[in-house]
Amino acid sequence: MTTKRLTTCALLTAIALTIFVAEAQIPLPFPMPGMKLGLANVVTVYAMFALGPKDTFLILLSRILLGSLFAGGSTLFYSLAGGLCCYLSMVLLRRFLSPKQLWVCGAVGAIFHNLGQMGAAILIARTPQLIYYLPVLLALGIPAGGFTGLAAQLLKERLGDRVP
Amino acid sequence: MKQRSNRFWLWLLGALMVLSGAIAFWVFTRTAAGTTAVVTLDGREVCRVDLATLTEGYTVSYTGEGGITNVVEFAPGGVRVREADCPDQVCVRQGWIKTGVAPIVCLPNRLTIKITDGQPGQLDGLVR
Image 1 (spheres, rainbow over the protein chains, first blue to last red):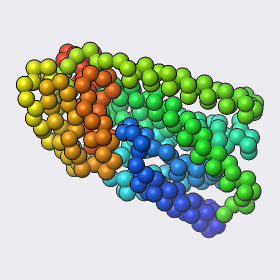
Image 2 (image 1 turned 90 degrees about the horizontal axis):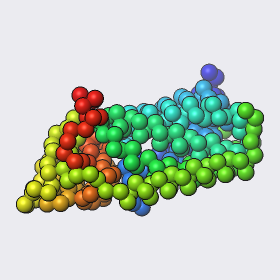
Image 3 (image 1 turned 180 degrees about the vertical axis):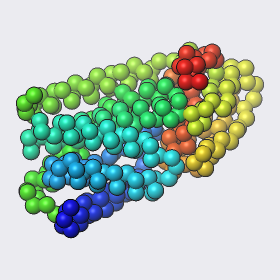
Image 4 (image 1 turned 45 degrees about the vertical axis):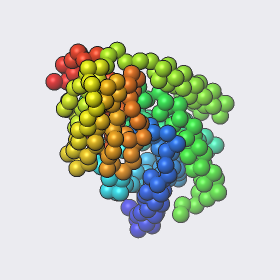
């Protein structure tokens, strides 16, 4: 890893972490466990297409580990499970998407983030009834993920192949 | 698999969204099979109360391994988290649950409250 690559990853991690912390201050319109906008995913989707899976993994992992320090409570395992599922789905989907379809990556990533997070929550809390929240989380998460993906797509179009 | 058009993805994701929305609507209009509130903390059941037999309300504080405390209020016919020192306050804002199937959840404290029929379920038995 060159110094430039390392700096780019560090910069994107810092941006993702800032978005993550800022987003936590936005109150939810209605109480729904596990629901969030997922704006930090803009960085994940962008990195996946601009830098590739390896760097994206490092950025995502760093953001989740550092983010859990700011979030409070025992939320690390939910984020980790959600983040890894989301990451894997994006890695598999990546090659089937054109540069005009990053929004799809955001939406599908959101679906798998919710699946992973829900799996972790059911195992940790030993409460299978949590699954009742999955449909509403998916119904809201798909458009939210689509928009964060679209934001990443527009960012990629503006920056072109120049990596910051 | 080859690359698909934007239209393909829009229809696929749109259909998934509508389907999820329909299932969500169905779930939230269902009612639970009983009147027993079951509190789970850090994956272990810590309390089981039949809300139908309560004559007056009371509160119990639960502190999880993460050091967060939820004050749970049991009352005739309903249960809620009255206050909590978790960062997101989702559990408090969920308010009273009476007959719904969706449990109250405090993800940061790993606390859940659900309404059941009072019989230890098969899943509970399997987990133990």
